[in-house]
Image (tube, rainbow, N blue to C red; front, side, top):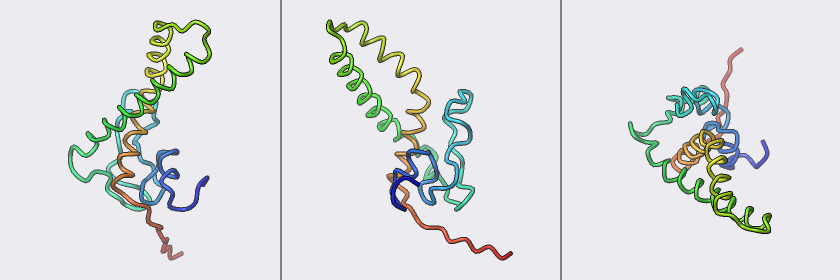
Length: 130
Protein backbone atom coordinates (compact mmCIF):
# COMPACT_ATOMS: atom_id res chain seq x y z
CA UNK A 1 0.00 0.00 0.00
CA UNK A 2 1.20 3.44 -0.89
CA UNK A 3 -0.25 5.33 2.06
CA UNK A 4 -0.51 4.52 5.76
CA UNK A 5 -2.99 1.87 6.89
CA UNK A 6 -6.51 3.19 7.02
CA UNK A 7 -5.94 6.01 4.54
CA UNK A 8 -8.98 6.26 2.25
CA UNK A 9 -6.75 6.60 -0.81
CA UNK A 10 -5.78 2.93 -0.31
CA UNK A 11 -9.39 2.15 -1.17
CA UNK A 12 -10.09 4.90 -3.72
CA UNK A 13 -7.09 4.62 -6.05
CA UNK A 14 -7.25 0.84 -6.63
CA UNK A 15 -11.09 0.87 -6.29
CA UNK A 16 -11.15 -1.62 -3.39
CA UNK A 17 -13.44 -2.22 -0.41
CA UNK A 18 -13.71 0.90 1.79
CA UNK A 19 -13.62 -1.18 4.98
CA UNK A 20 -10.78 -3.69 4.48
CA UNK A 21 -9.06 -2.15 1.40
CA UNK A 22 -8.58 -5.69 0.03
CA UNK A 23 -11.81 -6.94 -1.56
CA UNK A 24 -12.99 -5.96 -5.02
CA UNK A 25 -15.58 -3.18 -5.20
CA UNK A 26 -16.81 -3.52 -8.79
CA UNK A 27 -18.24 -6.65 -10.41
CA UNK A 28 -16.12 -6.22 -13.55
CA UNK A 29 -13.23 -4.25 -14.99
CA UNK A 30 -13.86 -0.48 -15.16
CA UNK A 31 -13.91 -0.43 -18.96
CA UNK A 32 -16.21 -3.44 -19.38
CA UNK A 33 -18.86 -1.25 -20.99
CA UNK A 34 -21.65 -3.80 -20.66
CA UNK A 35 -21.50 -3.69 -16.83
CA UNK A 36 -19.17 -0.82 -15.89
CA UNK A 37 -21.62 0.58 -13.35
CA UNK A 38 -22.11 -2.70 -11.45
CA UNK A 39 -21.00 -2.64 -7.82
CA UNK A 40 -20.72 -5.93 -5.93
CA UNK A 41 -23.32 -6.61 -3.24
CA UNK A 42 -20.71 -7.20 -0.57
CA UNK A 43 -16.98 -7.58 -0.03
CA UNK A 44 -15.48 -11.04 -0.56
CA UNK A 45 -12.90 -10.45 2.18
CA UNK A 46 -14.72 -8.74 5.06
CA UNK A 47 -18.39 -9.21 4.16
CA UNK A 48 -19.24 -5.49 4.14
CA UNK A 49 -22.54 -4.85 2.35
CA UNK A 50 -21.87 -2.08 -0.14
CA UNK A 51 -25.46 -0.78 -0.32
CA UNK A 52 -27.02 0.96 2.66
CA UNK A 53 -30.29 1.36 0.74
CA UNK A 54 -31.58 0.52 -2.78
CA UNK A 55 -30.65 3.85 -4.40
CA UNK A 56 -27.50 4.43 -2.35
CA UNK A 57 -25.22 5.29 -5.29
CA UNK A 58 -27.45 8.04 -6.74
CA UNK A 59 -25.46 10.44 -4.56
CA UNK A 60 -22.29 9.49 -6.42
CA UNK A 61 -23.61 11.51 -9.37
CA UNK A 62 -22.69 14.68 -7.44
CA UNK A 63 -19.15 13.37 -7.00
CA UNK A 64 -18.95 12.49 -10.72
CA UNK A 65 -20.17 15.99 -11.58
CA UNK A 66 -17.47 17.56 -9.39
CA UNK A 67 -14.77 15.36 -10.95
CA UNK A 68 -16.03 16.24 -14.44
CA UNK A 69 -16.02 19.98 -13.74
CA UNK A 70 -12.51 19.75 -12.26
CA UNK A 71 -11.28 17.91 -15.36
CA UNK A 72 -12.89 20.49 -17.66
CA UNK A 73 -11.21 23.34 -15.78
CA UNK A 74 -7.84 21.57 -15.86
CA UNK A 75 -8.11 20.84 -19.60
CA UNK A 76 -9.11 24.45 -20.28
CA UNK A 77 -6.15 25.77 -18.27
CA UNK A 78 -3.73 23.39 -20.00
CA UNK A 79 -5.13 24.38 -23.39
CA UNK A 80 -4.76 28.06 -22.49
CA UNK A 81 -1.18 27.67 -21.23
CA UNK A 82 0.05 25.44 -24.07
CA UNK A 83 -1.57 27.19 -27.00
CA UNK A 84 -0.34 30.53 -28.28
CA UNK A 85 -3.79 31.17 -29.76
CA UNK A 86 -6.54 29.90 -27.46
CA UNK A 87 -9.37 28.22 -29.34
CA UNK A 88 -12.72 27.44 -27.72
CA UNK A 89 -13.46 24.81 -30.36
CA UNK A 90 -10.18 22.96 -29.78
CA UNK A 91 -10.70 23.12 -26.03
CA UNK A 92 -14.28 21.87 -26.36
CA UNK A 93 -13.22 18.95 -28.57
CA UNK A 94 -10.39 18.11 -26.15
CA UNK A 95 -12.81 18.12 -23.22
CA UNK A 96 -15.26 15.89 -25.09
CA UNK A 97 -12.55 13.37 -26.00
CA UNK A 98 -11.17 13.21 -22.45
CA UNK A 99 -14.65 12.89 -20.91
CA UNK A 100 -15.62 10.07 -23.28
CA UNK A 101 -12.37 8.20 -22.62
CA UNK A 102 -12.47 8.68 -18.85
CA UNK A 103 -16.26 8.37 -18.42
CA UNK A 104 -16.32 4.78 -17.11
CA UNK A 105 -13.36 5.46 -14.79
CA UNK A 106 -15.01 8.65 -13.46
CA UNK A 107 -18.16 6.64 -12.80
CA UNK A 108 -16.25 4.00 -10.80
CA UNK A 109 -14.17 6.62 -9.02
CA UNK A 110 -17.25 8.59 -7.98
CA UNK A 111 -18.90 5.44 -6.55
CA UNK A 112 -15.87 4.44 -4.50
CA UNK A 113 -15.43 8.01 -3.22
CA UNK A 114 -19.13 8.08 -2.28
CA UNK A 115 -18.81 4.73 -0.47
CA UNK A 116 -15.74 5.98 1.40
CA UNK A 117 -17.82 8.86 2.77
CA UNK A 118 -20.05 6.35 4.58
CA UNK A 119 -17.76 3.42 5.41
CA UNK A 120 -14.57 3.52 7.48
CA UNK A 121 -11.46 1.38 7.45
CA UNK A 122 -11.42 -1.48 9.94
CA UNK A 123 -8.50 -3.82 10.21
CA UNK A 124 -9.72 -7.35 9.63
CA UNK A 125 -8.01 -10.06 11.65
CA UNK A 126 -7.99 -13.46 10.02
CA UNK A 127 -8.86 -16.38 12.24
CA UNK A 128 -7.73 -19.20 10.00
CA UNK A 129 -7.63 -22.57 11.74
CA UNK A 130 -5.36 -24.65 9.58
